[in-house]
Image (cartoon, rainbow, N blue to C red; front, side, top):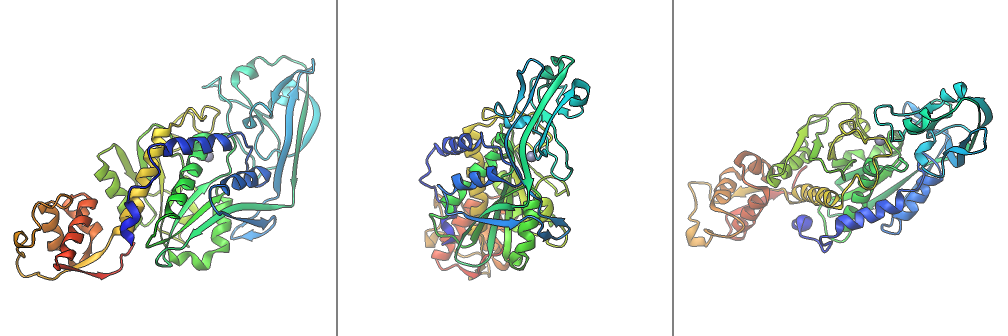
Length: 435
Ligand code: ZN
């Protein structure tokens, strides 16, 4: 049954375009870590997946944190003395400092400037800034526009609310052959930013669709959560079930044109880490596997020492290594359907390795068996080298992942060899696969 994990799907070559279309639909919504924008996003995802929407009340204690008050924004602008809107939330939701408290007032330019954020090194771009845990208000704008502001009085309106409500997240559980599960987590709290992280949302949706259409060995759990506080909240509410997690991926920044970067789990040698490294190796494409470090995205929480889950992070160019990160230049043009599709395919292959791993025992361990008389030479998917490696290392202690790592033979060929040898009665499977 696990064999189906890497079967070509019926998605066809336009999977990247489908992901990009979904991203374009979600792009204009002003999301934050709580509020209607997040809910609206999940409701759109529900058209694709039977996603469960959870609401966790403001004020709920989650480990060392507290679920914040809910933020909603209707409008925000700054008008100059002539009554012209010189900053307008309706033009771009990046213009508002995300989580700004409501404010109305008239200020001189010098006072207003204390609440303005720009990127002098990229004068045409609007930065994305948040103030989740400090009550303040502000606007983000291009540096070019800031330089054009004249002395005078400015009217500021922030029609927002910050009130008791809830934190919202989406969850989808796909039951597989065992209760052991693979966690796919993606943050969904950013407003109009494409790579970070509408790309992760889009790829996760299509992966969930695919996995729900095939039999799998593992169960799969997909999370669409606000960054940091969402992961902390989920872990706090679901602590009892976390030992079932045999592997996981945080998906973020999967649509830019850079090579793939896989960040290992804190453990460093989890099945997920090894499967990702093998798939990257076998792909022959440029890509990196980097060690765990305690900053980044929600792997920080999943890999905190009290959980230490086997969860890695799959990205293309890591955050901070591209100037468009957290700016208006992280637009729908910054991501490409081809790169989205390549990320999707690579993640599917990584999950396929976990699905197809196994532990076998050679039934003819005393000297090599005769392969020719069993018709095992020249089988197209399993070259002789793969057969010999699988026979030699299948002593009940080496999994197929071990064999692929040690031999340098592609994982798919190792798996084909094991199947051919098992069909010929030369191997039996010892036990179910382990991550
Ligand atoms: Zn971000």
